[in-house]
Length: 277
Image (cartoon, rainbow, N blue to C red):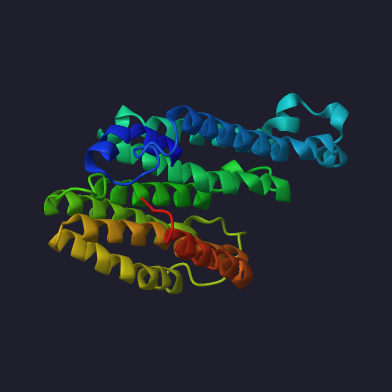
């Protein structure tokens, strides 16, 4: 978000949108230093979590440290580090001159896909060393990436009057991403237990969750003004919480799903004080 405001500084000053950098309540230097400090902390934490199991001998107890190659010992847990570095690069590239180019929505979709893959890669801490071989995880990442890329395209000029055709095209792309997410359990290996039917109950539940978003998207197309577009984009962002909760319900059961759903409470409360877009 800091990089976003730094990148949009001239536009925010021109449109007088009341943001801290544009109003000079925060200096560019302070914002830049804070952003890199937060990025550094994120990379450090992921690195420590990823490499810690090796130093505590969890892998060694299973196969014997002396007989293990570097790849065998560190390969599975290097994944989170690679993912977080790719995620940082995607975020930085998005918040540059590429933001308003055709690559902008693609990069934002890559950010969301990388965020999901970061969570998937953490499964190595639970003993799933071959997380990269889980096809449904990659399908989920692609689905979320396409979904986010679509509504990013629809909202890329959220503060202006937009053309309905351009907005509609973005929502169509998002719809494709949701179809991919709704079909994701069908790609899971046979040995992966599913809580609800992958071909009936899961897609129906996904459709029901998407109904409020479909309504907002329709209004943003029929009345393409800043207010309807921003409300639709906010709905699309908040919907990610419920889509992720449904995924958790499918693979992990109700309690993890409820825990994820509860995140909507601080999201709404914080949203009263901080913008979502």
